[in-house]
Length: 233
Image 1: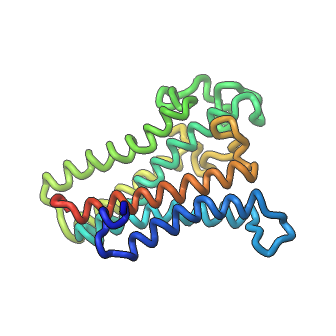
Image 2: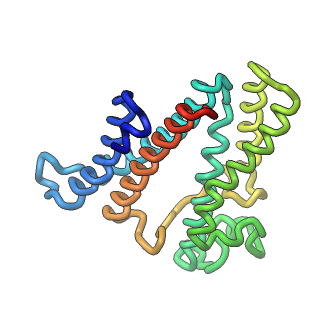
């Protein structure tokens, strides 16, 4: 009933959503509840790998909406994807606390190594998951709004818009690679320990993250399908 309400006769999208919801349940069970000697056992590295694929599928879905339906060739979607990743990475870095190499309860290891005296102002709040989750959406959204406002207000279209989006991505790449920007430089953010108090290396945590990724992708498919089938779409 729900799938018919959203998609009508399009069974491909409905099937995709149902498969994703099923995978969110079945894959963690085959990883956690099945013996490693069983032929049905799914090892943790497969769970983590496919979970990454699901995250990249979210990126592809967003690009398909902008390019495939709107006809806007954006070469800068990686920038928005990276901003969301950095927002969550900053939360994970704050969760390390005194368990880092240098034992500083406030500063991440790379800041101690680079002789930072205090935590940069834009890192405040990222010790809370709700704040980081909000910034995962807000930071890319704000960048997209500002960029889109100036680009479309200036009537930049076609290949010129594509070049500008690529230039924006490259500019952000160069900025984030700088050690003095406070984002880990070319080493990035590493050595994550916990998320919401759970060990990120634990099989149960990886399975939970896989399930969350699958459900999020399914909901994104529902949302984008509803958009393109609406009057606005």
